[in-house]
Each structure stands twice: as structure tokens, then as C-alpha cells.
Amino acid sequence: MKYAGKIGLVDVSKEVSPELKYRPGLTKWKVFHRGKGARQGPTWHLTYESVPDWKRSFCKPTMFHDTYTYMNNKML
Image (cartoon, rainbow, N blue to C red; front, side, top):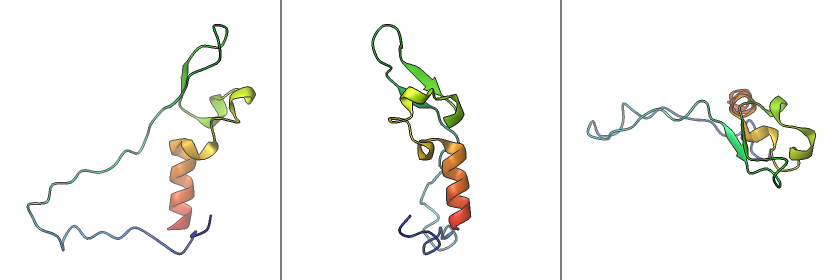
């Protein structure tokens, strides 16, 4: 990654207007793949390990929360 270790998140919640409403972001999500034809229908995947080999050219490891969270925590 081009900026790995060079950028990070900064908590500015105490420095902004008290009227600003915000919520924490998503920490988990599912990845959808539409499938191919009638034999391999659409599916949701919770982890990259659950993705069959033929779908891995479309579903990348960084699309999943466990990989994404690990990569971002490692960068910070």
C-alpha cells in the first residue's frame, strides 16, 4: 500500500461543535457475489475463506472486515 504507516486516524471529537452528530462506522459486513448462471446462484460471504476459488478473482481479501480491520490496525 502506497501510504501504509504514513497516515492514521485522529480523534477530533472534543474539538468540533457539540451540535455535530456522528456515529461509529461499520466494523463488520458481508460481501455479495451475484454468482454465475442457474447452477451458481447469488451468495453472501462473511469471510474470504468462505469464497470458492472460482469467485476469488472477483472477491478480494480486502473486501472483508476481518482482513480490512487487520490491515488498517497494522497501519496505524
